[in-house]
Image (cartoon, rainbow, N blue to C red; front, side, top):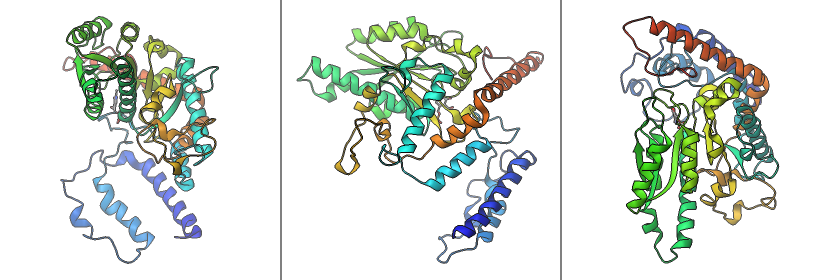
Length: 407
Ligand code: PLP
């Protein structure tokens, strides 16, 4: 496919996408297929000779769409929302076309710099403490785009683990790291997402899952008691993953109580707000973040509820040097002359290669403006309240939680 073919096929693809998006409501939400439906419809080996664009496109409606679950369908209510919008799709198209791999500043300066700037924009709009913003006076913090909330929790736990081991090594220089590791204890509520359990598995640390209160909120006293019990048993608390907007009922842990407990024991407090965090761009929802000043790190997914398509999981840390200490490897072939003055995002996460994801978030923030995004969030929350009223009127159902944002 040359440039002229691309111009023609690309326009056709845009037409196809417009028809798809415009007509998605007429399709079945979930496909009527059984496992293995696709195998008999496709050849068992890749084609040896090039195939025509029209043949490939014909297979989309005939073979692929029958197996697609339409997450953008107006009647799709499963799992969690999948953010999307035309500006986001266009931003991602451009990112795909540029095709840079922005693992360091030198690898593509705009890719790194736009990410830092856009994360400061969003962090300010959310109302994060200024220590989390890269460009605020004297700040050691900053933001990064990760592939998923699960990755955010994992890298924060890895960093907290590295900090804890470093501190313990200073206190007990002759004790094996493996022995120190076996003492480390992470905490979360029973309502936390399963990604915390997965992160603990990968980090090879113990995780204590705590009972929340009757409002499904983890409280400071519960955490303090658990930590004191564990310390008495020779364990070392090092990380707490709190949630603002839990997956099953959108409850909010009590950060104002949990924060001081973490400070007392020098424990990293992470705040996972994968879904609800997007609502904090509205003034009226900011009080749900009360206690955020105690956090070491925070994540929210614009790809869930801020009109940005997957993947775009935004994460901020109070101290980027603590974050990267756990993740730096520095082979000669990746080094460059500007590392002292710039951010190299390869040190902020697991993968080396990184897409230019900031473009789509930039397109979204500029196309809607904070005003437009606030209107979008408020409309969802208003609809949720309306739905709550309908449910309350129907004796067959009950409302299981306090509807604070959109569910
Ligand atoms: N944390 C919370 C609170 C969630 O609700 C979810 C997904 O529903 C996740 C983490 C996992 O998100 P991701 O798919 O981005 O890893």
